Structures are given as structure tokens and as C-alpha cells.
Length: 155
Length: 155
View 1 (cartoon, rainbow over the protein chains, first blue to last red):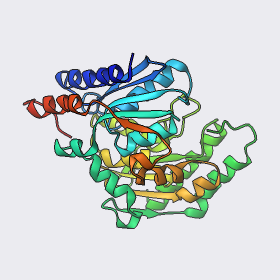
View 2 (view 1 turned 180 degrees about the vertical axis):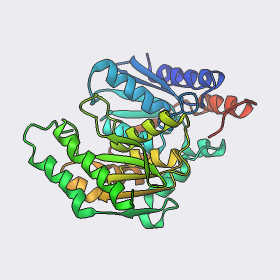
View 3 (view 1 turned 90 degrees about the vertical axis):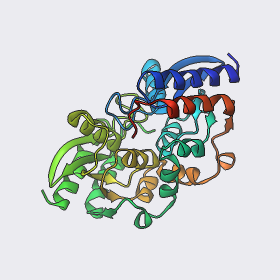
């Protein structure tokens, strides 16, 4: 499949998902023009605020391939990823992303993507989400255990 | 439980998880001092790059409560959330977050949290992750279908 055909598939998924009670978002993960996995937004359907199209596509691809690393693969998503999904794309080590709608388009139909981008750029104390550091010295013990562990799987 | 006790539980989970083959991250979700759900990092164990402690705790809490909205709940996490997890915290509508280690501490033991924060602040064309907009006009059809749908569940 060409790049346009792969994006068109992500768009088709976004439209189908609206008719299936979900949000208007679809994504596919591909390599060499072949789709390995698909995802759609099932936040309300599955009572899972993390069930965005990109997260679902990444989870499906990793489950299918038995890996947590999608190096060599690309994602085609019907909308520019929100920060959660963009973070997931980095952690999954995807090579490249293609998107259709922008975060401004998402904002225009009532989704908070732009708001969350704005918040993440702020220092914790300047965000609308209240936050506080607790027990910093005790928390470091977990990191010291990680550093000391000889047989860990790094990622 | 007090705030310190709730954070101490998240830290305990982070240490236990290292001994259980996972990353050094734990989180709990609580309301009025009562823990409703816990999460630990299972990225490598479950071949899922989205399986961070906070995402897992949010998914567990939502599954238990049958909701995609954790308004009224707080998250205690052993480390400052990465952008993926911070995004998930916003989407879950959690009231407040407490964290132990910082993203700089995470960077110091080899995790990419700081790098991803830096990348997300950049314009798409300036990021290390290559990206491209495709079929913008066609993609808008999914958003138009959403806008036109009368019985949608908004979030």
C-alpha cells in the first residue's frame, strides 16, 4: 500500500468508529506498505481513558510481534497525536508518523489535545493540575535498586 | 492512609517491581486516603511500551469503577510522570498528583522522560521523530461525522 492508501485506511477507521460508538480517531502501524496492526478510540466503549487509537494500535502491534520496540515501523493516524499518544510513539521507538487532522482540528470539535500540549510545556507549579513532590529521598531507593540490579532488561 | 503513607506504598511497589523483573516505577490511585487501584511498570514483562505504572493504575481504577473519568481521585506515583503518563492523567481527569523522583532522576538512571518532554515542546518539523501531514481534507470527514452524530458520548 502507498502512504496515501495507508492514511486513507486510518481515516476509514476513524469514520467507522464514530458509527460504532467511539471517538473519530483511527490509526494503523505499517512496515514496507503492509499493515501490521490497527487501532481505534475506545475510551467510552471500554471505560479506558488511555484507549486512544494510537495507543491501541501500538499495543496491538507489540502484542502481535511479541516486542516492546517497534523500531522499523511507521504509524499512520487520522489525527495528530495528543501528548499521551506522542509519548507512546516515542517509547515504542516508531520510525516515523503521518497524520491527517491537526490538534487544532481536534480542539475545534471539542477534544482537549491542545490544552494538554499547553499544560505539559508549563512547569508543574504553573499547571492547572495541582502537584506536589513527596518523600523524594525514599523514592530514590527504587532507582538505586534498579541501578544495582545486574540482570535487568533496559529499554 | 496519609499522603506520606500513600506515597510510601507507591515507592514500595517500585522497589518490588524491580525484584519482579520490571522497571523501578509504582503508582496508586486513591480517594479520601483509600487506595482504589495500583500499577507498576510492565513494559518489558508484557511487551507493551505503554504499560507504565501510572497508565496501568489508571486502567485498573477505571476498570474497577466502570468509568473513564477519575474526577475526585488522586494519583501517587514514585516518579514524576513522563509525557505519556501525564497526558493519561489529564485525560482521566484526576484531581491531583503526587510524585517522588523527578524526571531528572529518571534521566540519570537511563530513562528517556526528559528527552520526550523536550521533543514534545518542539514543532513537529523540529523533532527528531520525522512526521508528515497527509490527506488533511479527507481526514476531516471523520471529524464531520463526529460533529453530525446526535447520540455521541462526549468526553
